[in-house]
Amino acid sequence: MSDRGARPRVIHVITRLIVGGAQLSVISLAEGLSDDFDIQIIAGPQTGPEGSLQRCAAATAPLTLVDALRREISPRWDPVAVPALRRLLRRLDADIVHTHSSKAGIVGRFAAAPLRARAVHTIHGWGHTPADSRLRRAAFIALERAAARRCDALLAVSPDNRAEGLAHSIGQPDLYHVIPEPVELEPVVPEFMRGRSQAREVLGIDADVEVIGWVGRFVEQKDPDTLARVLIGLLRDRPASYAVLVGDGPRRGDVETALANAELSNRVMFTGVAGSARMLMPAFDVLVHPSRWEGQPRVVQEALAERIPVVSARASGIGQLIRDGKTGFAVAPHCPEEMVKAATAVLESAELRAPLTNSSLDELRSTHGRATVLDRHRELYNALLKDAR
Image 1 (tube, rainbow, N blue to C red):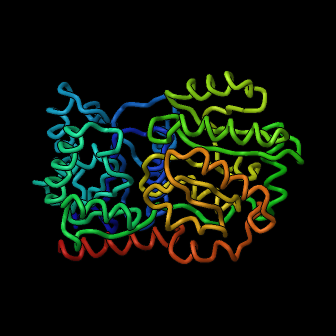
Image 2: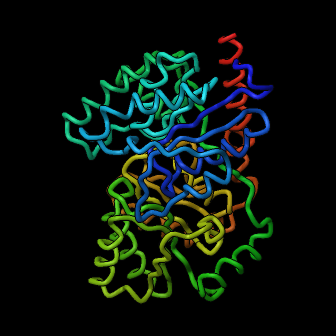
């Protein structure tokens, strides 16, 4: 440990501070562990239509932007990213370097390798995805294997993440720790109907309207094509229902066009980026989540915490969150018909209708939740620092 004072220095490194799950987790960890550790954040400069969390991050912990740290593979930036980040990490004299997202994880672990800091990487979702070419997947897997050899701990946010990493020979089993995303599982407004009334007042929706909700980024990962088909199916089958889509992204226009072509635009609200998307969730009767791949989605945990049933594609981490027939359903990916059927079952079920009962979430709260996750990180950091001494 450095001799700056009582608190060890932990530096979180992430590629970009857009509105996204990994970014929210970084800010939550920085905020929740600031009494125990001297926390700083390093990020790249990029933002996007999804919205920026740079101001929120800077208000939580000292933030440094590294111009060469970019999300995409770049012949221009990548050759200088590792040495630029290494110089900064050496100057900041970290005790622990904690990286997030695949690209920042690879660059950050190579940058930290010759330094005295212990290296930790959280797998919010692997960089190799089903949308990648075979060559790109092979390249990312090879880089992840190399980066794992320069790491003291790999934190998988779900058992599925760990299993996928080991299947690709990324790291040894004892390198992994399964620690979920730090999501508060108590509702923001304890009394459900008051929270619903407030959310619907903000949205301008009547109390008796049936609302199908979605929260996320309009990107390929979230399967906007399936999302549009699910909404068209549900809205046509249920003529009194309404859809609210919270978020933004490059493929928002595709969903808007599909709904307009189906002549359903007047029954869909696109809110854009919301300052607190979670505060709007009590307005929903069901959340649909047709994602192609995940680590373990925060949005599903947040909806459940707000007592909203969820129908999700069966991506990584979903199996630990949704109890079929109790808190919603997990269905096959790329299957809008199955998702429509499951969402209809939720909307027509007295047992599954919002609000979910507190007892239906007991199992989730026994293994997940922000306080539990912060404790797990605190224990891991202290164990690594003890080994270093």
